[in-house]
Structures are given as C-alpha cells and as structure tokens.
Image (cartoon, rainbow, N blue to C red):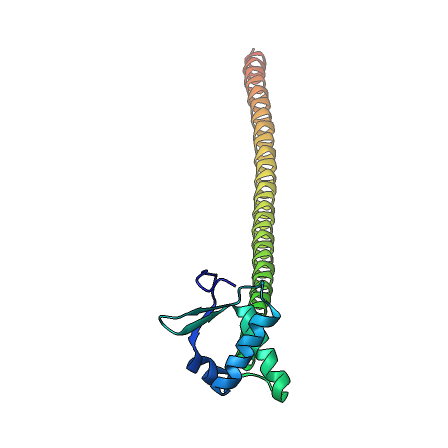
Length: 188
C-alpha cells in the first residue's frame, strides 16, 4: 500500500481521538487499525500522515473498526450509538415533517371545501335574490297591467259616455228643431 496516496476522507483524527472516540486503549486501537488494513488492503480506508501523526479513515472503515471493537467485548461503540441517535433524530424529524405535510394537506382540503361551500352559498343567495327581484318585477308588471286594464275600461266608459252625450245632443237638437216647427205649425 502506498502511504502517500491521498484518498477521499470522512474522519481525520489522531490516535488519541480515536482512542477516546471508541473508549479503547492506544494498543487496542492500533491493533484494530492494523487489522482493518490487513483485512481490506485494497479499500484505501486508512492513511497515516507522518507529519501530523493523524489517521484519516473513510466512514466505511470507521464502521468496520466499530465492528472489531464490538466483537472484542460485545458492546456497542460510541460512534455507533451516536449514529443510531442521529438516525433516530432524523427519523423523528422526517415523521414530524410528514405529519406536518399531512396536516397541511388536510387543512388545504378543508379550506377548499369551505371555499366551495362559501361559493355555493353566495351563488344560491345571488340566485335567490335574482328570483325575488324577478318576482317583484312580475308582481309590479301584473299590477301595472291591471291598472292599464282599469284605465282602458275607464277610457272605454268615457268613450261610451261621450258617444251617449253626442247622441243626447243630437236628440236635443232634433227635439229643439221639431219643437220649433211644431210650435210654428201649432200657431198657424
């Protein structure tokens, strides 16, 4: 393995940090890192920088180290516990987000129903108002037609009275003209 070859990294710690992270002795950590390199020589999971004395291990390698330490004492490593804790937090956040999304969807549906009901009520009120207006207009129209008939009858009555009056005037003239002749003849 080439020690100066750079690789993509996820964890960059010195040996003391690794010991503290896994709560293990330096000797145990050195053995586990050596075993990691021996078991997976082609993975490039570990790179030791001689200047800083820090070890860079990819996430997969850290998981394998955690597995080695668990096998050693059948315990869950601190890293794994932290990962599980983070995973649980993420699941809780996702669940909350899904609940919030469902609640938002539900509220949107309810708002939509209310808007539809409001529109329907507005339409019905407008329709009722239009129907009432039409009824009023029809009633007024009917009254006007009745008044028009009554006026037409009065006009007809007035015309007939006028005709009768003319008839009376003609008779009066006839009578007056007859009576004049009748009086003249009577005198003679």
